Image (cartoon, rainbow, N blue to C red):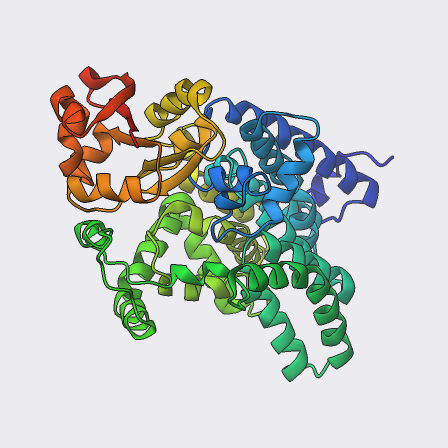
Length: 477
C-alpha cells in the first residue's frame, strides 16, 4: 500500500494513488461517524419532522407530506435498534459519515487529490453539516444521494445516475431540481438522448411506486404532496398565527403565487444571510467567485436555492445545508487558481476560521421541545394507540404513542368543541405556547377552576413555576 506521506515538494500538486485515497477516505468516514456519535448525545430528543419520519411506516396518520426514503432507512436500522429516535440518528450519522466518499470523487473531477480532500474537510466538518447529520432529519441522507448523482453524472453512468437521483427524490422532492437540470442540459444542449432516456427510465422505476401510492391514497396526482408548502406565509409571525384559526379562508393558487413573488426578495436575502453565518463569509465570497469563473454542471446543485424563497416557509438554517458542499467545491476552485501553496493554505485557513465561531451550534439541542417530550414520556403508560392529542407541537403525542392534531387559533369554547368533534382524548397546554401563540388557553394552564368548569380533568402537570410548564387535560365524553 502506498504511503500516505507525499513528497514535500509535491504536497499540494501531486495526485494520490487509489490505495492512498481509500485509506484517507476510510479514516475520514470512520472518524466522522464517531464524531457524530459524540454529537448525538447533545440531542436526546426528536426533532419536529423526525416525529413523522419515525412513525411513517408505523401509523398512516403520521405520514403527512413527507417522502418515504428516510423513514425506510430508519425502519431498516430499527431491525437492530428498537429506539426509533436513536435509529433515526444513526441513519443520519451513517450517511453523514459516508459523505466524504462521493464528495471527494466529485471534487477530484476538478481538483488534485490534496485540494479535493481539503474541500471535503471544509464541507463535512462544517458545524451545520455535523449538526444535521446527528439529528432525526433527512438532510444527510439527501445530500449523500445528491452527491452520488453528481458523481455518476460526471462518470456518465446514466443508470446509476437515475437510481441515485430517484433515491434522493424519495428522500426529498428538491432532487427534482438538479435531475431536471441534468436532463435539460443533456437533452437540449448535448443531444444525448440515449443517456437521457436511460436516466429517465431508472429514475422512474425508483419514483413511480411512491407517486402511484400518493395518487391512489390522496386522489391527487402529484410529484410531491409538499407542494402545500407553496402558501401565503407572511414575514410578520403575528399574521401567520392569526391565520391558524379554523375559519381562515382557503388560500387560492393566485394568493399563494402573489405572496411568493412579493416576499421573494426578503426571503432570498434571509437565506443568503444564513449561508454567510453558517458557511462563513470567506467561503461564500470564494464560492461566488468560483461560480462566476467556472460555470459547469455543478451549478445544478445551486439551482434549487433560487426557487427556495418561493416556498412559504420560515427561512431557517436547515434549508441551506445541502448547498454547503457545493459552496466548498466552488471555493476550492477559486483557491486552486493561485499557484503558490502558501496562498492556498492561507485561504483554506481563512475559510475554516470563517465558520469556526458556529461550532457551538453543532452541540446545541433544539429549543422549546424538552418539556413536551417529558410530558409525552410520562403519558405513555396512559395512552392507547389512536388516542388523539390536540396540541400545537407533535412531541407529546409522539412520545406518548398517540396521534397528533393541531390546535386551531380559536376562542377557548371553540377549541373545546373542536376537540370533542374530532374525538380528541387529550388537550396539551404549555406555558411556551400560551405566552405567544395561544393566550386564550392561559386559564386552562394556570387555573384548576377553569379546568373543572369545562368538565376536564388534569392527567399531567409539571413545571408551572418554571415558566415552561405543561398541563395535559383529559376530555370527557
